[in-house]
Amino acid sequence: MSEKLYRWLLRLYPSHFRHAYGDAALQLFRDRSRHERGFFPALRLWLDLLADLVVSVPRQYRRVQPALSGASALRSAAGTPSFYLLDNQPPRAGALLLGAVLSLAGAAASIPLSHLPIYRPFATPSILVPSAPGPAATGVRLDNAERRRVIHSVVANLKEHYVDPAVAREMQEGLLARDKAGDYQASEDGTAFAALLTRHLREVSHDLHLEVVYSRNMLPEISAGPSPERIAAYRNAMLARNCTFESVRILPHNIGYLKLNSFPEPSICGTIAKSAMDSLNRSDALIFDLRDNRGGDPAMVMLIAAYLFDHPEFMYRPGRTTPLCWTESPVPGNLLAHKPVYVLTSSRTCSAAEHFSYDLKMLKRATLVGERTAGATDVGVFHRLDDHFGIGIREFKSINPYSQPDWAVTGVQPDVKVPAADALVTAEKLAQTNVRK
Amino acid sequence: MPKQKLHPLPSAAFQILLSLAGEDLHGYGIMRQVAEQTGGRMRLGPGTLYSSLQTLLEEKLIAELDLRADEKLGNERRRYYRLTSAGRKVARSEAERLAGLLRVARNKKIWRGDYV
Image 1 (cartoon, helix red, strand yellow):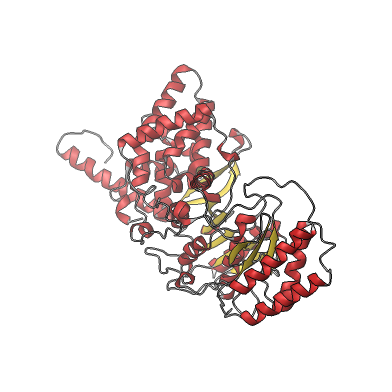
Image 2 (image 1 turned 90 degrees about the vertical axis):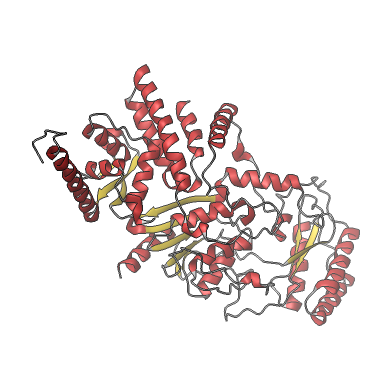
């Protein structure tokens, strides 16, 4: 119980301190409680701890983080309020007291925060995957009417949105001809039908970013955008999980290590991301562990990539040619722009994590170590076809500046191919050799 | 981290440097050593201890070693810390500064110690 209480009190410290020393502080607490048994020693221990909190918490908040103090305001794509200053201002005495009270109340209630769902309300295609909430499907097989409705909706959307009208027309004609010939009549399964349509569209267009998807659950109406409840649930889930920054630490030989399991929304997670990068600022090399990263928001890709350059750098992304493709480098106070970078990948590394890996590889800014990535399709803008089908269409033509195809379908090949489980050890060795030079 | 952070050297940071002068220690080891060398007057709490370690690491006055278990404390692996030569130099100059103060105190007949 007392350990649980101390764990909660540790939450009063800013996140950069908790990441770096939270576990060690807890271990120290355990050691002391083991050796200081009995009423008076335990009382002295708690008095020590409370005095320690009073002295050290404000000191941690006062620690100046150069990159943050001079950085520009965060972009807030969804119009949600910025949390930019939350972790970097000394808390008022009242706030500290309130934090302590809330910690105690939280410990007592033992709310299972970790069971909240994680999803990405701002990423267009991923909102469709079956994890998206919505009324469950009844499980009926596809009938002729639904197939026809989907095909006609695909045709209409291509006509309206596809970047090249001539190719769009060719695809429309192809689909209608196949439908007329009865090619789709055997498709009773939604996923298989969507895959078949995707294949036929790609055969004509050779566009790997075009994709028809099926969701067993009813698709939410996306025109209205995510509801406030979904944004709030997403924010709570992200903050409860430290925005999926699973580990931020310094490995032996002063190698910075960041394990990131998604690229979360910067207006919610920007502060945590900046703290994480700041805590690695004096590393001699960096390892980004994206082996369990399932993607997320491209804005977070850009935010983190900004630390790796001393000048604005173009990060290619299919379907986007806006200024948002340039990193906001240099980041004030940043020392990482010329440090060697290693990115760990696996066959589960997906979507935004592939965007990060692909561009850093092509820019020769990082060495990729691990397995070929998943090959997720960045489909651009999503259009709802009916309650269960949707199509992702790139509405902008962007030219890939590199000779290698991007990550769609084929994935990103690592520079050093090793099983994902061995990637960290391999990258550490490479980094150590590089640092010694 | 600006250099001024350690000028003058905070008392906790000086005690930590002294505790590491003899051997490499983990966090709890440092805490105990500091308590011992101050006759129990300074018991570093986790927040103060790790804040100080963080600053000392940033100033390269101490170095982190690999994780390893302390047999006396069980199987849990712990991060050990070592005094660097820069750290030893800073501790020595702090000791000299204090020695100078004591000389003044003795000359002013405020203190009658023999050692300085």
